[in-house]
Structures are given as C-alpha cells and as structure tokens.
Image (cartoon, rainbow, N blue to C red):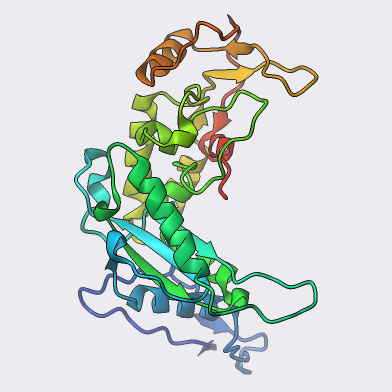
Length: 310
C-alpha cells in the first residue's frame, strides 16, 4: 500500500517554471508496515527549496540597466537576451545565466541586521558595472529577477535555483564573473569569463586561461547551455555528470618554488599558449617559460576552480 505525502502542483500550460526531477517533491512512498502513512513534513528541505524557487520565478524580469535602489538582502538571477551567437540557446528562455546572492550580515553581539541597507541592490549594481566593462556585452542585454529574503533562506534558495537550472553557465563552466580581483604574487590566469568577454580592467595583462583555448571554451559553453535547457530528468542528470567530468588539458602552469614572487612557467601546449596570449595582446617577452610534458587531464569541474567565485 502506498500513500501520497505531497501533491505537487502541475505546471500550467506554457509555464516557464521548471519541475524538479520526478519523485523529489510529489511521489508515492510505501509506508514501513504497508498500512501506516508516513508523516508529512511541511518544512522539509525539498518543499522549502521548491517554494523559494517558485517564488523567485514568479517575480517579474526587470531590464538590468533599469533596476533602481531597493533595501534588503536576498537572491538574484540574470537572464541573457542579447545577440551573441555563443549564447544563442539562452535567448528567449527562462534559464538564468547567473545566480547571485547578498546577505544582510552578522553581528558578533547577535544584533539583528539592518534591513534598510541595499545589500542585494549593491551586489546587482557591482555586477552590472562589471558587465558594462566588457567589450562585447552590456547591461541592456540582460534581465534580472530578485527576491529579498532573511539570511536564513538565502543559501537554500541559491542552491535550489542552481540545482533546478544546472549547469548555470556563469556559476559553473564560465567562472570568473563574480570572483574577486586576482591577488599579487603568483601568475594569474585569465578566467573563462574574461576570455569570452575581454575588457575588464582587472583582467588586463593576465595570461591566457590555463585549461582551455577559445575554441574549446565555445564547445563547452554550447554543451552546457544544451544541458541546462533539458527537462529535469535522469537523462539530464547523466549528461550533466559527463559534462562535469569532461577532461580538460592544461595549457600552462606556474612552476613550484618558495616565496611569493612570480615563478617561471611550464608550458604544455605551446601552440595554444602562444595563440591565446597573442589574441589578448599579452607581452611574453619578459615571461620565462619552458616546454614540459602535459600532465594528467583534470576535469571541467576542477578547471572551473581556477577562478573562484566571490
């Protein structure tokens, strides 16, 4: 005997809401003794996640360049609507290209946060400025949705949005958009985001990406978008797993050594190294490097960590 523990609402015809994988929210679960119904938990993680995701999706999309100051912390999602061929699959869809958040902040004395501060708007504004620095996109190419929340719900809501739209492009394969500016000392690589969207001051003079040529980036971006547009089912889970484990062949890395000064480089794919750095106008005349044997390939997921998010 089975008992229905939660009856999820069916999506309306033409709805842009995406359903969770079958069985996560609405399912028939046999009770342990075949007769006694399991207790329904209205505060279960699955239900809370669904509520947060659906509430976010009910919020109107606002042109990113038109967002005005508002108070509070919470979540936001960017949606691409421009004409770059590389993002063609996302245009006209309701799949976000980036999911971000801003918390209200903590007090060591346990004081409540100041909810009048525009924490979420400030984060959106910073990212809008970052987009406008790039040479081939600007804020008018994007819409934004945002949802103000208490801090306790922000991480759960972000996780729900990322999971239901995975892989969210600028959060996964194209890291670097929301990351902090690179520090000094080590040789910093250009992120995938700054390779596709050159122009930000923070990326000026950086060496090419450590793992991908421009052609390899384009292929991975196309694959990621295709997966994110798939229905949430076992096939998408399978494709996503293969994508995350796709091999990434290193182009270069900094040699090991003591101290914080820049080290010489080990170059594994010389033709790609020279071509990519020439594409960004990087002067290699003062860079010491030597050819080395290509190490074992890493994966798309690990390679993305080269540009940690902030």
